[in-house]
Image (cartoon, rainbow, N blue to C red; front, side, top):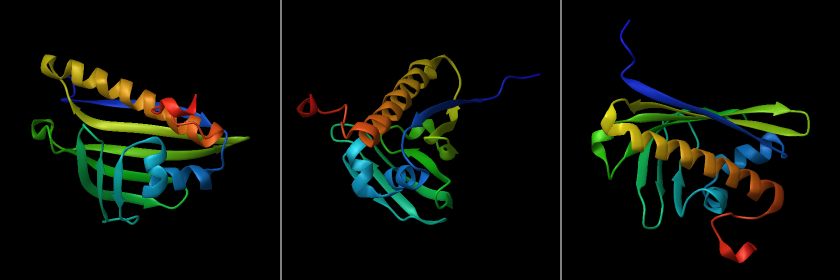
Length: 150
């Protein structure tokens, strides 16, 4: 059996916050800027468009392919600065648990091959970091990207 041509990253983080609060954090531009990126535009509906920008970093644009209020957000994840990656897919799913919410990050469609190993590792590190920052912001009001909070 041939190996798949792409890789998938699956991570999750437990946040002591309601699914409603977490969903707001992953879908509202003002809140997205508190834990994830520098500039955000997001049309919160299936078929809507988004644009996420990091200062000194990449810009991702794409389409909302799934929007289930309070439960799931799935986006095409396009790399404007690295078009050779192609289109990948990012799914954020919320699972209510006693005392909070499990946020499941699934990033699929990442190319395989030696050329993509460091890219894949960087994506794993990025989602780990941003998952922990989401947790920090929602639980403690502290953005780990800022020295001002310490």
